[in-house]
Length: 417
Image (cartoon, rainbow, N blue to C red; front, side):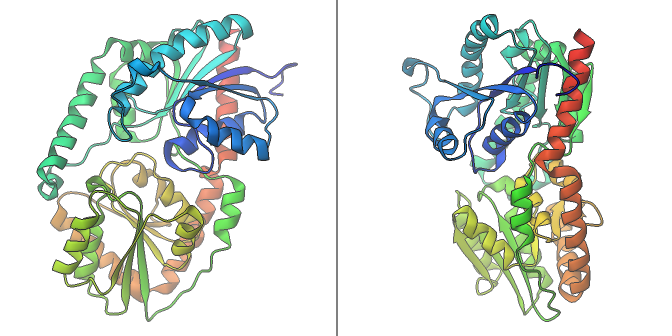
């Protein structure tokens, strides 16, 4: 394995790590599952992930994977709610994990430690203090919603964006973040925006990976079985995700209204605090008869809805690695996104449309034109869909990400030898 008599002993820090999930929990789990094919892997994750991981391992054992569960004592996390205080909890959790990892290292003598999730460039990893090579990332978070788009936000959402920017500013001045950057053999980043921020912090080596998330071959095969139809008389758009202000779904609805496609529909799968506002907006735009809200659906039903639609609309204002765009491409669907953050690195001119993001009005006009074009050019939808599926296979499978990390690990360990 990797030209060594024994496989490397690798410690992964994965605060978010859960089977059968997207986003960061899926990143933690899938990265461990891929790397254990080649290395002895220990994963430290939160105790609340235990029932999900153990249920999966009972059904599908993974030889060579050791999972260690840790959480802060109750008195140090009483204030944490489902969506409250998660970043502070993550910060404190990592301090506790460092002391746990110190003891583990004395027993096991790891060859390398890798911080996987959460992937925020403005938050430190105390595991960088271990006396072994440290890999950081993929990290994101350097993206932000352009100021002109704040005009559409409610007061509470503007406060959210302001505090998010302040948190990044504070994080960039945290001495432990600087220490993390300094001790990283490599910082893996997911977007150009984050690359610029990490570079400014003084990273000695930056590797840009094609997004944080990926799709395994089984999922690619399943998504490839969804039907692809090319009708010139009707078109159906879909947006999938949490209904949050920065997801930009309101921009998609405005563009759909302006496109004025009598035989068009817009489906929205997901739920969240913006749902009522989006429903009201569809009525104000007089398109409520062609817009359908499905709420949260199980993953299989969500993918089934994707299979009934022609184009994914994902006008997010600061996503750094959305899985849904990859799923759409794997399902041979073109994607409409903004030229911001992670989606702009995932989508190419061959696989969809990246709308420049100057003002909400400009985005609405430009996106409406794209919708009109896709409605009357079904062959273009098919061509872009095929190119998207090919791109996912080449760059976004977990197998390809594993290959990238294996090469990186080998370089780093040999440098330290």
